[in-house]
Image 1 (cartoon, rainbow, N blue to C red):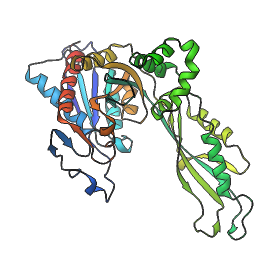
Image 2: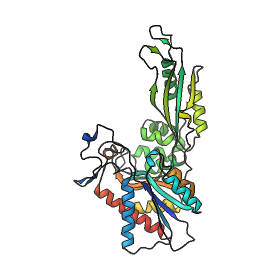
Image 3: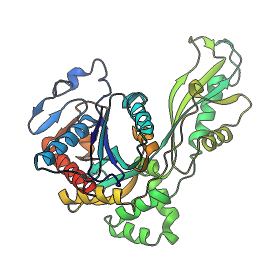
Image 4: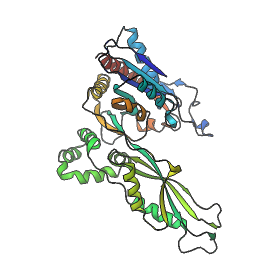
Length: 390
């Protein structure tokens, strides 16, 4: 669904707000674990319950409500504003967002900036930090899946060799996990943690203020948290294993599927070469899963640009004490398509999430408080007014 709200000044480059209304399925057999049926859209006890409440129907609803509200006030934009709502983001967005981008390319449309789903307003997601943290993601990680293949001699399990293909594979995976890709507090990661550190306890404030002395210590500390590790480097995640077809048959090959989320500093080729070095063995092969080459991280958008300022200003007008920081999206979004025609691309959904609420993201009891959805509408109203005003 592509909508255009025509602006009065053709010299101003348009902007795009986007979201998607497709959702992931509910795991069969878990429907009874939900407080309310997952697809009934129940509003009860001040909560919106249902699949899509976080990902990402809330953004679509809030953007359209915001547009209706400022239309009712008589707002007329100087800058053209596009809305694009995808139907297939969860499976790559090729026909939805991808089709929209191809159309806009044919029409010669170039965007000043775009805003898609991404991070949220984080409440209590980092220990010891009181204010809301609003990471406006200026990049998203790339995606690569590799297969680590160990080969061995087949035969009957009653006469095994000293090491089977499974043993070779286990050794390779152990070596890979012990050799993470290099990380670091540089670029977007450094900027984000520098800003957040001002709201940490005294020890961390001193350390971040003197990174020339404490940088390695800080990186070690952040590496020990899943969030910090994901922000600092390309992550390595073995996710699937396969071996013999029968318990008493020695496997000819054993395969581990490993998923990588690429930091903007790393390339697909660089990650593949790193893995090959880490698991080097004459009986081990590294290959791309299903012969898919994967994709590198997006370009990094400018967090000093007017578009970033518009989003940050709009958030602070509703949540004045929130901390606005640039961030990196560790998952994927339709912006991989929209970014092709935008000078800058940002990824942020202005809804408050807590650790408890985040368990519903692609999980059971997906939900958001009505109050937070209403405030998201208010933030999108400010974004539309500030962006459309010139």
